[in-house]
Length: 88
Ligand SMILES: [Zn+2]
Image (tube, rainbow, N blue to C red; front, top):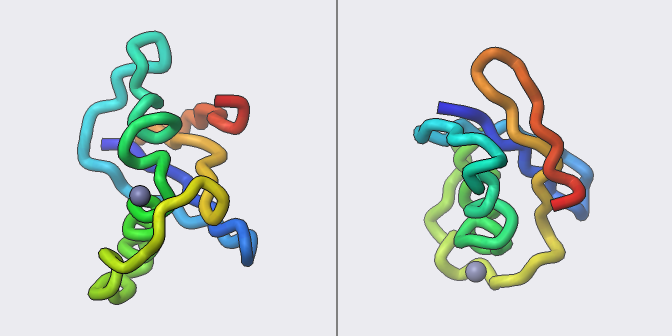
């Protein structure tokens, strides 16, 4: 398991979202899903952002796609190591 920092750009609020998979390392492309894959899209990031605070995601399927409303500044491993994703 590791954590993903997701920032809502309109407010600047950052939440740490737990992600229940092993971090395979940047060299193995572990960041791909967050930077170019499914979770690079605002619609999916919005769901993680809401779940981090146990907020209602009933209407999450209505959330529009895009790449401007949320950003992922870093990944945090369970030992506290932070992996900067801002340039990726
Ligand atoms: Zn989308």
